[in-house]
Amino acid sequence: MNAVFNHLWQSTAFALAITAAAALLRRNSPRLRYWLWLAASLKFLIPFSLLVATGSRIQLPPDTPTLHAVTVQQISTYFAPVSVTPARATIPWTEALSAIWLLGVSFLVIRWFLRWRTIHLAVRSATCLPLPLPLQALSSPTTMEPGIFGILRPVLLLPEGIDRSLTPEQFEAVIAHELRHAIYRDNLSAALHMCVETLFWFHPLVWWIGAQLISERERDCDQAVLTQGSQPGDYARGIVQICEAYVESPLACASGISGADLKRRIREIMTWRGSLPVTLRAKAVLAAATLAAVSIPFVIGVVRAQTLPPAPAYGYEVASIHKSAPGQTRMGFGPGPQGGLRTMNTSVMMLVTFAYGVRDYQVVGAPGWVLSDNYDITLTPDKAEAALGPDPTLNAVMAGQGRNEQRLQAVLRDRFGLVLRSETHELPIYRLTQAKNGAKLTVHPEDGPRPYLHGNGPGHLDAVGIPIKMLADNLSRNLGRPVTDETGITGQYDFKLDFTPDLGSSPDHPADTTGPSIFTALTDQLGLRLESAKGPVQVYVVEKIEHPTEN
Image 1 (tube, rainbow, N blue to C red):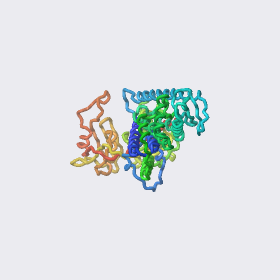
Image 2 (image 1 turned 180 degrees about the vertical axis):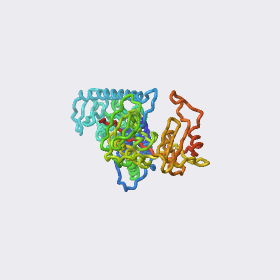
Image 3 (image 1 turned 90 degrees about the vertical axis):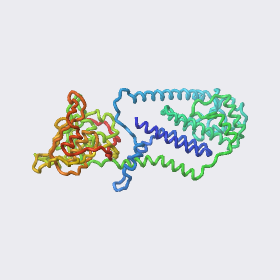
């Protein structure tokens, strides 16, 4: 839904810019203003996100200096195709709004078809006229005004006896008016705008743009007729006679002669003095604005493409993927064949956060099924991992896990079609620092037991031989907010932490208000402190992800 809102406000802003440009060019050619309004209309069919996506496919060489994504973050956010995880709601707003939109589209399609059929039947019952024109002229017994009907092979449809109700000069002016419509393919551009009106019927600006298109195209045809030498008075009287005797064309894509504000048109015809030519400076400004409108989103896409995470350095030989059995409650990660990885009942979000070493809040733009669909995966490395001894070091364990994380990245890329973009957002964080009286930590002995970090039930943390950074990562997972290690403490330590978890009241974990909060426990038991702040946080934006094929 956010993508739709993004597209709507971008198109609205573009149309407002066109409005300003048309106002500045009000004394110039109406055909020029017509093209501007047509561009405003077609913008509704072309989201900037397509240009961004096109630019995102371009990967520059590694040694090419490029702008970092942070420098365009505020801009690219508005041009990016946004997809958010749908929140649970009691009212299905998306479905309801989609149904209303579809009803409006259906109504307009039926109305356009019925009006088109009226003109189509008039053309089928018409007879040919021997007029020396570059397109076929037909005479219809209907009371419809003169007009051009058709897009690919247009014909001039004239009501019977119109040549007898107008003077030769007036009839010649009417023919010149309609030929101008045919030369510039006004029916085609009008049909394109009718598509915009059908899809965006709820946007009042779209209908206003349609009125401007009709007004400018009729003004252009009027000026073309006057330029050819027709007398303003005769031409104006001819238009009034047609409006009095015949019915206006029911379709905008069947260009007639009576469109736009008739009173204003007659006044402009009678006072016409010609249009000012577009100066070289004005042409340069228009060209620059057009180039900027297309190139800026494209350049943003190119810059964003350089923020893709690096390709994984380790691959896999075999990856078996199956949907988890319904009702399965156990979930987690464990060792796989050849030192690989095996997951049980894990959501795709868990796979992504494990593979890239991030938290849920650092993955944005993912569809809802990434949280709801669970999979069992067995990952066999392309090169078998060396067996860890009975007492492996922390570095060896972490190194092996890092390799399996990269292998899982490759699985997500190849089997889930995952494409991520790295960005830096300013988010609320916690800073982990030493308390006023210093840290209360026990240094892990070199010949001590193998390192581990266990959460023995809610609110209990046992650590043996772990660095402070690992504690910060654990706190980040529990608090739902990034925790940065700013203690300045290095090495490995043993400690225990007991606190009251923020679980709320439930049969399994009733609320406990007697114990200390995690903030108080950190200070009293470990001599550390958590401070609220804001800081840069790396996030991954999901550009693309697909359901995997099972095997």
